Image (cartoon, rainbow, N blue to C red; front, side, top):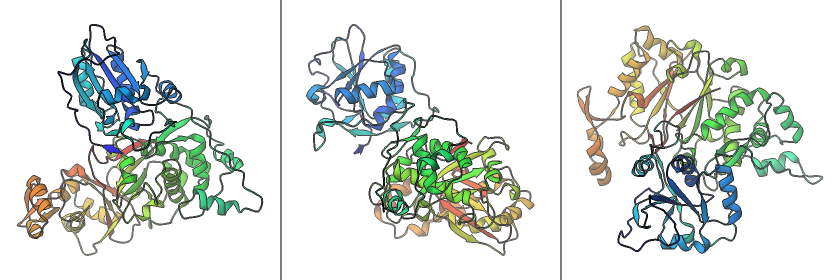
Length: 518
């Protein structure tokens, strides 16, 4: 169970905590569980702090799980076991990780639970150390933790340690002997599939898939939320085999697995939300033609093996390694066909502007992939427009409905412009940035749309909205900035159809688009 970050209120006049020889300087006491992802996220920062300050770890788990935890994360501070969880009760814990800054007498100077970079930096300064957390190091600014072990409904005898980001080798994949007479395709369909048949991942097929990948089978590429399963090279390859990938696809699949586990994307939340969204993969660069990715007509359809198998391999990895099964942790109310496969490539040859990955900071000849927490495409048909404003105005009406019609400022969108629409906009001399700014300035929700709004929406959210005029009508601006709208060119060169793809919750506490090199 996850809870929001907060600061614990502890009686500052309480007697000192016994059992800690603190010396003359303050010490930071950190309670953790070995299978708490947020605890694992915090350890590298605590290791930095331990170089110049006193840090003491308190494990709520047994000796075996704790030893593995400290080995995997190479903890740079001493760790003690909380026998019988007595200290957890003494400190009146509710959640982990919990941090207590104690003075030399053992009195609590400050306390906090969860992971928060700003708090860690403040504690570091308070302990006369340099800040330990960089805003742009790829980790989230903050992350909630887990319920303290002593408050869990059922006490556990053994605690299975979760994999850690500091380790490089994982547990080998299980080998299953199928009884004689059992159809291997039917067995794999029942056991590993996503309601579609899969190819049995035999050792021979895995070996062929890895023929051009000189890596250790046990190497951990990433840990896949929401269950943080070890995505070893072997297990990723097994899912690639099941999806029907060719060996060269491993060049794309490995960085894709790393990207989907990037904390900024927040696939943990994406896989557990009741929202529609699924990870959309956008491919750019020479790899599109090298591996045969579709980017012309039927770009969102079953057009090419590359798109279909890469997208499906990712979904199988999220299901089989990450544990996000649609009858369990994945709580999407209606789902999204993209949970079978959601992968497109940009039609760079028909794009009159710079390719999307160049806009994201890469060179044109560098292949790259982008992930976006995406709803299903919302089609826009506009065959009569002759000017950029007319084309984009039609698209703005679809953009206004992203997430839900009345909600503003909390979502983002990808606009997939067809080559014909892109030519109309570009022919008039408009840049991509001008197109984005036009969409931003002309996408809003009329105030009349709130006349019958529920009280919560009418009084709480609307007070934060910005009022603008669109064609003389008072509206609330839909998006926070032009950067909330991305433009990708894809699809066939015949047909004036484009698409709007809305996002799941946007921003650091929701999901942020990520782009990785291939």
